[in-house]
Image (cartoon, rainbow, N blue to C red):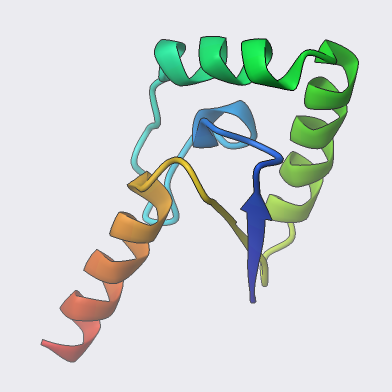
Length: 84
């Protein structure tokens, strides 16, 4: 199941250390800075990241952020490899 995170997170590495294929995700510092500026409420941002991490840790769930294409790109790669 895919869970679309919308604006709850900008950088996927805020809630997971790896992509769906197990590739390490490095922090996108510019995205994190932008998120903290536009989000204003740092406690709410942190709470969002904790909630998304918990969801993403469920085996049947993949959290899909709106602003970080690495997760979707990885899922598309996996799909292409299976069908190709």
